[in-house]
Length: 110
Image 1: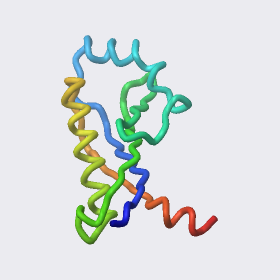
Image 2: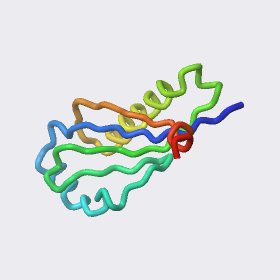
Image 3: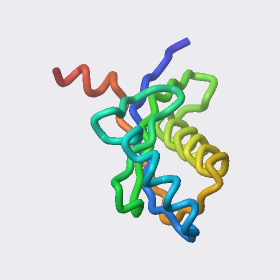
Image 4: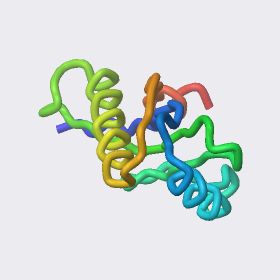
């Protein structure tokens, strides 16, 4: 069975935040600075102090069991993880979009 390793970025915007949510996110922002982010299975969330846009970075592994289109599977998994993380945080969001790179393709070009 072949394993494919993808780097998935899910981007979006916070939406409908109340004053308390905004204050909490601003207080936690230093932990979510771009310089502290990485591609991990658990994902890393980054956003700026203005608490407008955000991104999640995931390492997503797919196998032949995930279907023929590994790229679409990685995008779907990334979106599901980001949506679940936002729900767990209890914050609204809008305009989610995802992009994925198959690392095998990147390494071939190196």
